Length: 346
Image (cartoon, rainbow, N blue to C red; front, side):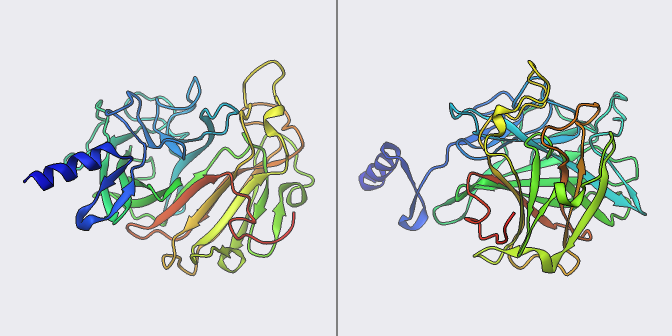
């Protein structure tokens, strides 16, 4: 009895925690809604954090219907918004838009997204409580946080739930597993799109053997609309050292934080250092139809303000035909594409 008590005291007194079988690991500094923050915010402090509206990384936090993704890019190590992720399922060729469609609950733009606990999956209306998620050890020395996110039914009949997971040994990325809820219309694709590449003015798309530039893909694109999508199939996508499928975007600017698109205003200002944003398909999960798609804009969304430096990628998405439980990982890292194993030259 005394030996067991001494072991527990020793574990509590160190930076490590004790695991079954005598293994130990450095404990992640988790941010968990309802436990150590009063915002709908989750993640690993020092790595990627993500939030649901009305939580976020700036005020106001942005449109509804979007997952907010933040990273410590500020010069003082503070967090800034880097991108949004929208949920866009396709049913009978009709694409749903979680950001743009009116909520049936208040007839305001943006479908509701809310976290749910293990005992109340699939509620009819958003729950007001903050849900910390489920923290567990998938393997010795590793912690994982799972949070289930309910998406308000889309206008095309799609009913979708996401499970957002993050691991202590991969603090710079989240994995999103897609599930169709009972009563959903048949889903052809459930596109998770990083929908705000213009914030960082992402112009370089890093593929297996080439780097595609928005300036070269869309040299004549002008006006306030979206340029058409460019599609790159699986054989154009790189493999990481661990055999994951990987594709990334970066800005072509050395100091993006020095640019203020709207003079004397913070609107559309990217407030930190240069990073690499990427989509990843975990090893062994890619299907033959997997592909990446990008589009672009020459002006900022809902404005006539030209994007400094020219046309930039806006939507960045990894797609494959829907199947229950399919997974995609989204990450932000200070590593360069070359350090991630991506080749080619800009």
